[in-house]
Length: 393
Image (cartoon, rainbow, N blue to C red; front, top):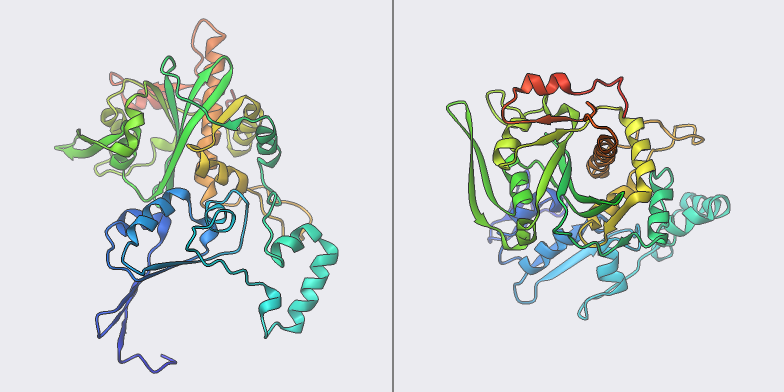
């Protein structure tokens, strides 16, 4: 408007279109990465806040922008050295990349009030100063819940290559989202160790999508005359490794009974049990958020992460944090809810489920800390056997 071009451009909710056929489109990479695959003839892409873009998103976006002389512009404030964008464009930039560092000293209109704040931060908190004012990468976030445990995991070389063992069953642990992310971790258990093979998360997906991720082939879940019908389609090449997995249990959060993504009251439990063609779906007991976090902390020393398969999840766990109170002296009790929460919640369920499995091994009669859905049982039967919030494992 200020340039006097309003008569030439039609400004819409998600795009700006020019009379000569030019178009500016706006997309969220994490939420709309599948739709971005269909783009063609793009001249320029500008990725803002690029420090949050994952490897999987870059692997889709970069081959999509293939027009001759096309360009991708990325602007971001560095966060961690292991962020995909920092590693890809700063540490090991493409040979045809132009990398420019722009800082406070490059601003000809840098005001005195910011100069005073800069000097104050430099004196009060040198570590934060390097990140905030000089663009250096952080080491760890203030209030990061699993910082100590992750530092030890890296020091112990437990973030490494973790191969799939075809002699062992595979488990999954889920956090189910309705309006936000669903996250899944894949893991195996051997000799008191938890080997996490990979993880996955997406925003606003369907149960068909998540079943597809688990089986490595197209899955369609539908309702036909109040009955759940699942159809298996073609294999997906990039998920071919999951064809080998010998699944034993898929652990869902305790509130999976209450949540539903389907019509006519069909639960997530019922849909997944049918779609995945398995006999059991585990329900993780509700032991509360804080007790769950403590369970994860105690379980951490037994966990090995596959560095590649768990890349996005490790980044989320590293950033999962409690924010400071307004008095700037203490941390809030409740963790910050953002994109990291779903990976962290699924990880917490993994720890609680594993501890239940270990308890089961030590008694002749299976304890009731874990409830299992069988095709022959009703949903109410399953829910009645689940532990209540007052119970602990």
